[in-house]
Each structure stands twice: as structure tokens, then as C-alpha cells.
Image (cartoon, rainbow, N blue to C red):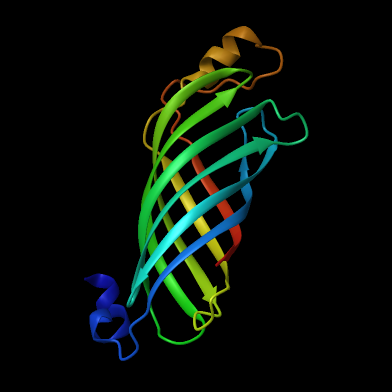
Length: 177
């Protein structure tokens, strides 16, 4: 309800109702580094079910560290976002949950993450759309795999407390059909 009040009128009362199913992919560049301190990149496939002033999103994706490709993650996500304006270019805010497997040197841990996002959807009145999205993901489960890696490779892995809850920042660029 807080988002509804930000724009000054109920999202459900929008004059132009859109009902679109958007299939797409997105590329990810993260400002967060892997457990080893390397930058990460990734990609994802998602489905966005747009109804009026909001959309539900379901997707799968992966990240990998560069240049070694020894760290990474696989995730499934679900979320919802609300448009703050109507028109061909829409600003949106939203959030969701991710079930993730984070791997470091072949060791993996299952985690749960919550994310918030803000984005711009371009060409909303067309069948092909482009979007740019900023996202912050907070891991809700500590990444204990980092401590296991520290025990195996103390000379190359920075020490991390066992209750480390990793926060990740990402920039997505996507195309949907």
C-alpha cells in the first residue's frame, strides 16, 4: 500500500490496463565479488506476467566468477514489482525471494535470499521490451562454505566468520518478448 501512496492514486485505477506475458533473458553484472574476491557476471531467463500496474516474475539464472570461474551460483526466483507510472516507459519497484546454490571450489551450500529492485521498462506498448534493473540481494542463510574453503586453502582464502550474510548488488540489462 505504501507504493500506491507514493504515486498519489491507486495502481488498480490506471486508465490503460495491460495484460502481457513477457518471456526474456537478462545479463547481470555484479558489483559484488565472489568469496575469492573476484568479480562475477551472469545470465538469467525469466517470465514476467504483467497485469495492469504490476507484474509477477519467475526465473532461473546463474553467476560465475572471472577470470577463474571457480566460484558461482545457480538460483530460482519469484517476485513482484509495481509500476510507479503509466506510459511507454515505466519505472518500477519490487522484491522477491531466491532459492540459491552457491559454490566455491566445488563446495556448495543452499541459501535463501531476498531481493529488492528498481528498474525501467522501455517500449511497454510494443511486443519486444528492454529493461534495466538495479537489484540488492541479501542472503538470509550464512555462507558457511566460505569457512570450509578457508580451512582447505588458508593461504588463498580471506577469513570470513561463519555467520557471514552476504549482500549482493547487481545491474541487469534484459530483453523480453
